[in-house]
Image (cartoon, rainbow, N blue to C red; front, side, top):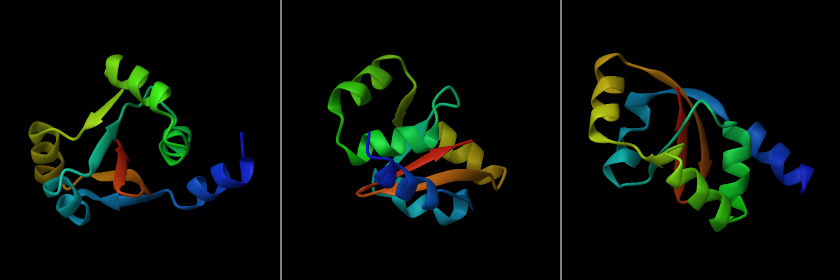
Length: 94
């Protein structure tokens, strides 16, 4: 594991209001990450394009594209989420 790359993902992780992320949701680029997962580790696996790990998490319903219901709830509550950019994706976690 490249700790330098993982640290880069960690440094790019921040709290942000959903209202600032809605445009990424509209483009289908917002990915929800379960609280069961470490957001930095998930971002790191995305940056590596680790298809096996990502597929396992998809199958376990630990990540997926942000749903309309999630987006609406976050909009209505002006939710502040943890987020990290791993182009072209924006990974978000409550």
